[in-house]
Length: 260
Ligand SMILES: NC(=O)c1ccc[n+]([C@@H]2O[C@H](COP(=O)([O-])OP(=O)(O)OC[C@H]3O[C@@H](n4cnc5c(N)ncnc54)[C@H](OP(=O)(O)O)[C@@H]3O)[C@@H](O)[C@H]2O)c1
Image (cartoon, rainbow, N blue to C red; front, side, top):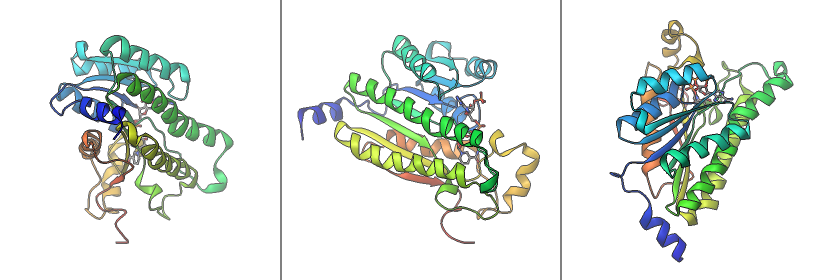
């Protein structure tokens, strides 16, 4: 083991030490639940979301102003990413964990996808994730303590459903899975882990209003769709697991296990 590897491994924050966590897509759904869970665990959390008013209301609701900060902007814009990590360094000196949850879904038959849909999907779900991860890795290196990235992918990229046409959206999530594995190998010697969760159907505004949840439940192996907290458990596990990297973990109540 090289000196750098030994040093990053031994300096990686212990499970009891307060972490600094950057969460993109933290103004809603899964990202919001992840941010709330980390705040409850005593972490310092930087929340990123697109809509400033919505983000401010979530940050204020956390009622932990000394341990939280919000950065509003489009994650596909490098200026948003730069500002996020500047704020993180200014407020909390370092970053330990990046959770890339910002994302959109555009599901439609293949030939109906417009070039604008493609740009939006690639911009938010891939470009933003790449830019944020690059910034985090630079800061992990500056800190010399390793670090963890958890990407939010999608179970439909592992097992498509004929009833949910989403080829282009899932092509982008497949790219996230490929990036997760390749980057995990590239960064492993620096004790930086890169993993992904692949949610099934989770109760968030992304899948529509609550009135439709009951109808979706029937199509699930467990007879119900997931809660954001179900994904939170997996994100927190992957972010803290020091010897687990390159994993794309389905959190889908068995959807991708087989035909049912
Ligand atoms: N819910 C599911 O069933 C499900 C299934 C599979 C995968 N996923 C994935 O899970 C992740 C989170 O989705 P969710 O269900 O929590 O959706 P959500 O409730 O709609 O939340 C999406 C979050 O991403 C933010 N966001 C969207 N575009 C952005 C941009 N360009 N720049 C910055 N922030 C942006 C949103 O901010 P604003 O609110 O300000 O727009 C919001 O905070 C996504 O990557 C999604 O693909 C979800």
